[in-house]
Length: 119
Image (cartoon, rainbow, N blue to C red; front, side, top):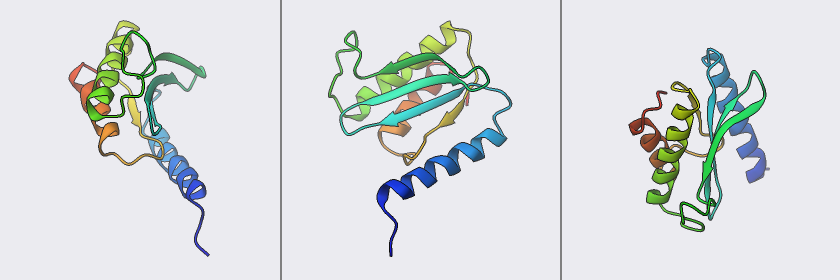
């Protein structure tokens, strides 16, 4: 009997996170969540258990609410990178979660790299 989608996604998320934790070297984590309408990114300090900075398409100053395209994801990636650098974080590790590194997730990562984050 095939597994349910949510079970497969949960396994993938845990597998990716556990692999990344082995190479993290106490760096903060750039976590990405993609819904059908929006994309969210957070830089999280797992040692302290707190979010350092966050950005998403839901923020009114970006004017991207409901824009579910690659350009909106790139703007969110650039914004989260700028906020992270302003907060003193230059190096992170990228946690794509259960999402495949393609499309909006890849656009967010590329924009964050171009804005100065290293991962």
